[in-house]
Length: 301
Image (cartoon, rainbow, N blue to C red; front, side, top):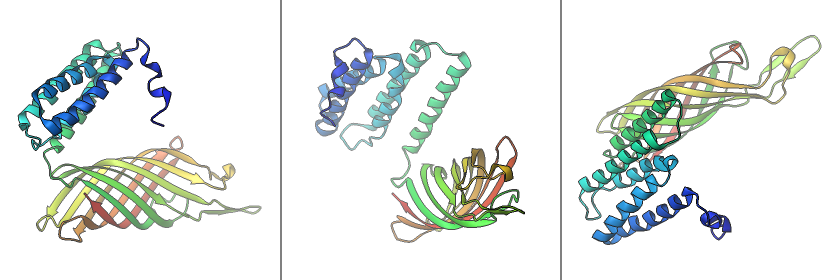
C-alpha cells in the first residue's frame, strides 16, 4: 500500500497541502537525525522545517500542537538540555495560535474562541502530564452484574462485561473512557394475544475524570469518577406497540473504585468498581438508571 501512486499523485499541484506534506516528511527525518547525531545544522533545519509545516497553510496550524508535544516528550537524554526542547515547543505553539487566530478562515467569533480555548486547554493538560511518572496508562478488563434501578423498562438484571482505559494526567487525576455492557437482559412482555422476548441489551460508553488517592506506598488506590456517557439500547425483536424499540442518547455516570497492586512493580492491579449510569432519552420518555458492579484485572504501563 505504501507504493500507491495516491501518495504522490497530487504533488504536481499548487495546493499548499503539498508543501505541508513535504515539510512534515523533512521534519520527521531531521527529528530522528537530531536525536541520533545532535548536530547543530540539523537542529537549525529541524526548527525551520517545523515552522514551515505549521505556517504552510492556516488550516494546518493545528499541527503545531502535536509537533510541540514531540519536543516536550524529550527528557534531555539526547544530549540537549531540557529548556531548549521546551523553548522550541512554546515557539511552535505560539505561532500555531497566531495562525489559527488571524490567518484561518473566518468563523463566528464565539465558535472560534471556543476552539482556541479547547486546544490550549488540551495542550496544557498534556504538558502537565509530561512531568509525571513513566506508568501513566491503565487498561482494565472487568466482569460483573448490572441491576436496573430505574424500573421503567427492560429486564431487572443481567451479566456485565467492560473494558476501560485511563491515562494519568496528574499524580491524582486520571482521564478515562471505556465500554460497559449489560448482556441478555431477558425482557419479556406478555399479553392476551402475544408473548414477546425482546433479546435486548445495553451498552454504555463512559468518559470523564477520576480523582485518585494512593495509599500504602502507592500499592493501594481508592478513587471516584464522574462524567458523560453515551447509551445504546438494542432490541433484537422489536415491538413498537409495547415500547420495545432500540434507542440511544446521552447521559452521565458516577463511580467509585478500589484497586490493589498484585506485583512488586505495580503492573497488574485487581480492581472493584460500582457504577451508576443515568440517561433520559427517547425524547425524555425513557429514564434509564442502571447500577453496575464489576471486578477486573488492570494492566498499567
